[in-house]
Image (cartoon, rainbow, N blue to C red; front, side, top):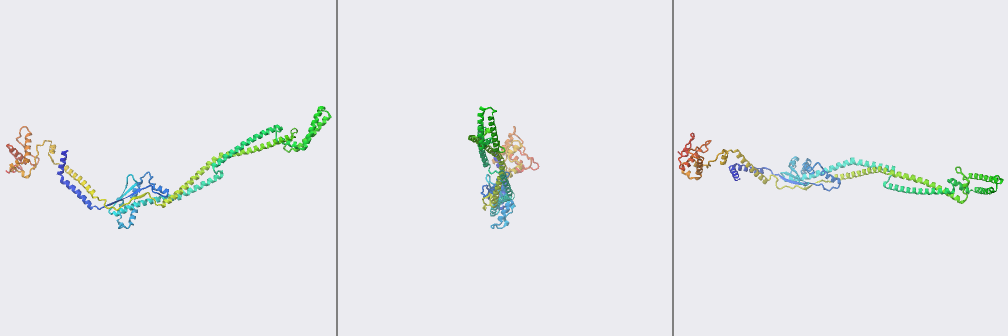
Amino acid sequence: MNNSIKSILTVCRRRSLPAIATFTAAIAGAIYYLAATPRVYQTSARLMLDYKLASVSELGRELTQSSRNSISSNPLADQAELVKSQAVLARAIAEVSSESKLDSPQTIPKPKNIGKNLQVKILPATNILELNYENQNPVLAATLLNAIAEAVVEENITSIKAEASKIRQFLEKYELPGARERLIQFETAEKRYRGETGIVSFEEQSKSLVESLASVENQQRNLLIQLQEARSQETSLQEITKTQSPANAYAAVRSGQNEELKTLRAKLSDLEQRLTEARSRLTEEHPTLVSLIQQRDGIQRLYQQELDKLSSGNQAAAPYDNIASEQLSQNLASQLIANRIQKLAIENKLKVVQNELANLQKRLEELPTKNQRLATIIRKREEAESSLKFIQNKLEEARIAEAQKISNIRIVETATVPISPASPNPPVVLILATVFGGILATGVVLVLELMDNTLKSSAEVEELLEIPLLGLLPPLPSNKLKLKSTEIFLENFSLLEPYRSLLKNLENRSIEKPRLIIVSSTSSGEGKSVVASHLATVSAMLSRRTLIIDANLRRPTQHNLFDL
């Protein structure tokens, strides 16, 4: 780790000049940018999409919330796009152009340029839109952004009014006349059907019919009881009076009440008694008995004639033995006749009651069917009435919404005139220039290092050649290259020790001490003559016989180094 840090510091020191130059150029460019770039001022305003704004009409509230109920779009995103629409920007420009505090209308940018510098942002987890606008004129920036915010609100009001107007025109032209016509049609049908069926109220009429039916059934039950009693009385009277029909009873009563018939019956009764006495004393051929029989038959014929006179065309004459001659018989016969008349009256009344009962039952059975159709007509009439009322209410709400200024967008924060410019921001620019300059300087150092293929350390030499390093020789100043006075060289330990170490390393590389050392290089100017001269000087210092042979026949140097 320490070696790496040292290597990095070594590279930085070696490339410090180009790195400093690059960093300085970046800072200078930032300063020039700050000086040359015009100041731009930014201001902001906020709009809120509010769905709870009060409206007089329900339709107005529905229109303000129509965008909220949209499934396929985001209401805030839609409003954000509408803010930058041409209609809104043109309205804002027209409003700002009419204000006297601006110098001239020519300073107002065009809608296209305003759209470029206008930013609309949706604040997270809110219904608020933040509008940001930049301009070189701070007053114009604030004025124009406020005009844009007001134009958005006015455009929203205009849109709601337009929707309300379309709804009103549609209701007035298409829906309202049709609803009225349907209501009139069903009202007429209901009135006509009620007149045909006589149904006024199903519940009341059903209740009335049930009560009437119960009353008629009671009457029928009472009449049946009365009829049964009358029939029983008639049977008893017929058995007592020996009369099977009321006509016979009537004839017997009339016959019993006629004076002539009473006289004739008295005579017949007298003759019957006389005949009975005569038969007890006389034979049938006796003249007295025959005379009494003849008298009796004559009176009977006379009685029959008188009885026939009393009988009408269809009435049968009462037989002689069935004539109610006494008062009790006449009363019983009269009761029989009255009972028969009463029975006939009860039977007739029972027929009427039974017919009435059948009629009521039929009406009660038909009433649900009739009422079902009436209910259908009433339901359609009520639906038409409800539809008409609904359309009239919506029409009134549309008129109110059209006349009312309502909007689901309101300004919650107006734009103020900015004091300090938004761009360029000197601290930010300088920080960015510093960071960019540092990055660029580092890049320059890296590029130079990558392009430099020279060896900078002994470790690199060992790694490249894969042979051990024998020694590291220090750079010699120019006054130390020539060995005019060897004492000066030998007294300088920093110069002497590296060469002594090199000589020892060379000697230690082999078992036997080397007697010949060749110093050479791949090209001229690499310092082989200096190394050979100083290495030979150290060898001589160690009391060794040393011979320097300069093999560079083209450009010999050793005689110059030793000043010979």
